[in-house]
Length: 183
Image 1 (tube, rainbow, N blue to C red):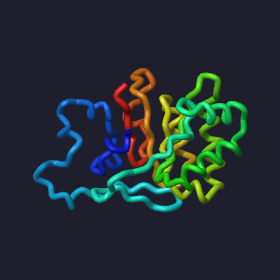
Image 2 (image 1 turned 180 degrees about the vertical axis):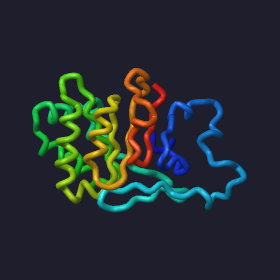
Image 3 (image 1 turned 45 degrees about the vertical axis):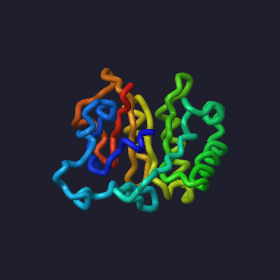
């Protein structure tokens, strides 16, 4: 869902997806006087580059590597079965995912350690690591640790938690897009 809201003009900037539900969608569009060719494509990468631009009709984001959205994946991670969890990520890439969304936010899990371990395992799997990674977490320390592990230029998403929000100088700057959902 977030894919449709990410516009190439926001490359290397923080984006507040909450503005996407605002009745004034003009903030999500390039200026009307700017030619369409003036908007460069958003460039992401794993081991291989991915350009998402005006000609990109759809971006397939694999979301099965999410402990809050997949009970099977959560069970694998909670039981320490990371090899089976890697198979889930591999299957998503084989089935056409252009970006892999990874979330380790679970109350009974050390999210940061699980994220780092899983991403380090992905780095050793070229067929998975070739696509960009989207780090999905409500905790800045998990996002930061995850972004340090990925190869290339990935993305991060986070919750709207104001108490966990660091100053702008502490926010990750080495990713393509930092997005925040409206909830």
